[in-house]
Length: 84
Image 1 (cartoon, rainbow, N blue to C red):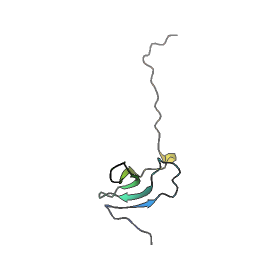
Image 2: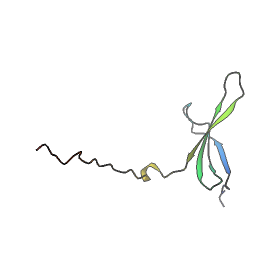
Image 3: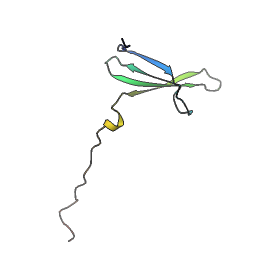
Image 4: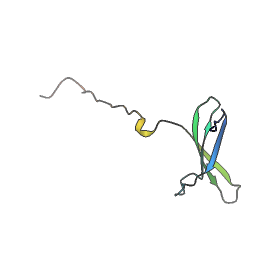
């Protein structure tokens, strides 16, 4: 039986694939109170002379990039007066 998050809950795990400073130190997911599922990313910030804190990013879970529909925009001629 797999774990299912309840609305208003989430989990963060240490990012063992971090290779650059800009990558998050923790990653995970959460379910918002309305049932929407989101990705979580967290960075530990250690400002000089201040208490460390976590900066968190929340992104909606979306379709994989290959599944995203990209509309094609067709430009219409500006007028019917053709130069020939």
